[in-house]
Amino acid sequence: MADLRIGIIGAARIAPMALIRPAGRVPGADVVAIAARDRGRADAFASKHDIQRVHASYDDVINDPEIDAIYNPLPNGLHAEWTLKAIAAGKHVLCEKPFTANAAEAEEVADAAEKSGLVVMEAFHYRYHELTRRIRSLVHDGSLGEITSVRAWLCFPLPKFSDIRYNYALAGGASMDCVYPVHALRTFGPGEPTVVSATPKRLKGGPVDRAMSARFRYENGAVGRSDASMWSSRLLRIAVHIDGTRGKVRALNFVAPQVYNRLRVTVDGKTTRERVKGEPSYDMQLRAFLGAVTEDRPFPTTPRDAVVTMRLIDDIYGAAGLPLRGESQDA
Image (tube, rainbow, N blue to C red; front, top):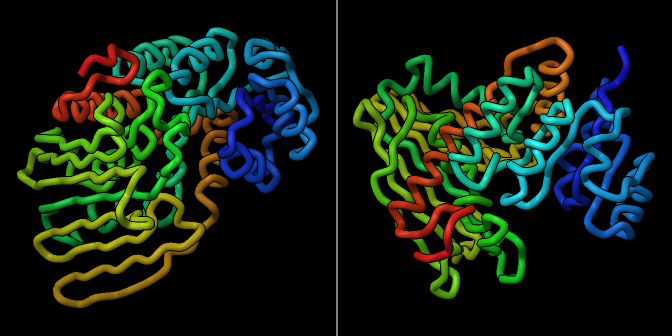
């Protein structure tokens, strides 16, 4: 079977780690084309990463008949527009998270994806790593008893306020760029959580959250909390803590576990510590994408799954008194 030919729209910093290097390790994928807003940047990117063709525009990549799938790492506010264009052109899509700017956009993309029959995947790569599988098994096999609390953090310092991740017009904000903790509350919790309250730290008093803490409740009475920050007093915190009636889990770096992770599990008073090994999460994600395209294999980070996450993000912004991304800046 021929390799899946993938085109990239946008010479994003994440592309080499998230797709280009994995495609060199995972059989069946070939990154063949790219376009960027700046042609010179696209040329330099293609030369550095040995990409065959440079197109003049995103539209040219999407409409290239020799491309089967599109990787969309554009700024958050452009995800829906260009994923919809790729679907309309008959291309499968691997779209970076957050999937869209808000839940209404996610619904539109999910509807289009389902009607097309194409594979559209949200790139929550951590969801495909062995560490996630291990934690989920502990949560769902009864080892921890009834889950009572889930808390997740993604906090890091990003003092460059001109960065696009602080740009409201591009759907910026900590809750968007640091969406992992909210998704983790869904992945590792005892069902789907609902937002109870949210407390933002605004960038210069505007509509962009440089940090956000949100509290949740699950149907079984368990509580949750997510902490997202791009301007953190701590240098770095990436963790998930899960408590149950029989035990607890403490996982360090669930987001990029191939770099480094630590898992501490306490059950009935006995504690074990381990580092969970496995293929890089991006490699596993690409394998899942290829499997979905070529063999119709199911995968967890579907457009409908993304709709649920984006509803929670909308609810967080609403509870925090901030406008939804993609809507008015009046707050």
